[in-house]
Image (tube, rainbow, N blue to C red; front, side):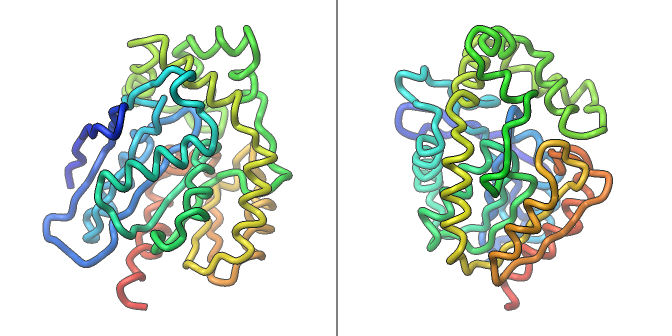
Length: 283
């Protein structure tokens, strides 16, 4: 199942996204997958075709400021959680998607959770992979330093930071051919580093996780939490506590998997995620 690379103009900015479509049209809702820091849609490369093979249209965008999407100046785009939520809403409207399943991962991926709370009528099912869910969550030093004045401005211009951060979230090495894709935006323009710097500066994790904790107290859509238990930054205990808040939830613990499950071990992710998303047409 081939994944296509596409671009879409939404307002002033161009989005880049990867899409895998099923061979035959089905009535299954599409799936949107959101990446974390400092990754891009490429992290979902093994998950997209697995979903399409089961009849689901699967779309993974690069957030604005990341990957191969536009990288607006922070005077035009604030790089806050609210800004990401609004931009995502505009993208989904432009894609003419009325209802879909949402998959989120990582620190900036938490903006996807805020989107779900703001537009619950659009969410068929929700899957969460190693994202900050609790006010107890902390930005790890490996990411926090990218937003520090002077230090962060220098570090985010170094393409090797991608290697250090992606591999710092687990115990696996990322193949050089894959790192080439992750590094490419940083080698092409200094705008990639400036966008990353602005995003980390504006994470406001305590504020975001407070909204997540209070908002999901009334969440009713089917939810799956897939957690790499070797995540050095977000312990599985936070996922367990969050799961206890929800009624319609299942928690899947992935052994030997770190902060980026779809990068570390996509086969394990697919084994859990695909059946969960397929259930929507038989329940």
